[in-house]
Length: 242
Image 1 (cartoon, one colour):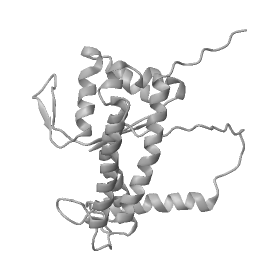
Image 2: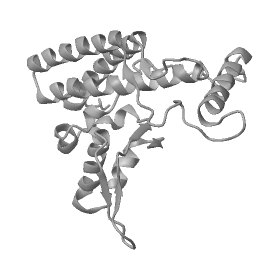
Image 3: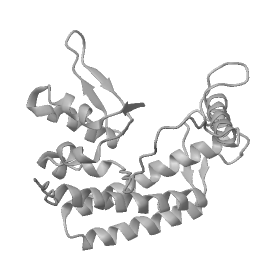
């Protein structure tokens, strides 16, 4: 797996236009990455490389004024790329004046403890060796009965909303949320296991409260996805001239 961190998402997408077919080959690989499909990489000076069971996360920010030029193309509006993103949109942005105030020690110390816990509890054992988060060879995590029931309820709710969706774009949002909620719950579960420093005996089970939390988060991301969609299809307001 890999994570790509981009201070400006538009730059990442623009860089893909350097290649043939307007960057569609790279976008197709991004779409397949979401489903963890095997990917072939053609190397100019070497053998074709097969990446099995790939996983990639993309994390980045974007100026709100660049939203339409980044995600508003016909390709991205119709191939499901936009719906694969979980958007966070800040509606009311404060612009504080410069000051010399320092971050309170109680906040900075908590961040320091969290970072140390994740580093020592997940990636290294007390003797300096490397080990995985879960104490098993395959790292498989299963939903407990309560979590499975919550997921079934949420999944079927989204199925009903897909049938009532006014556009294919909206229906695709619900389809991707059915996948994203599992990924999100998995991340939260991993952090919970790390915080408990591997002492939990049922680390291979994802609890109901974890799934419930992930579902509540998806409700926020659904609202943000619809907000982004409206901004992509609405005509921008023209600036007044004097």
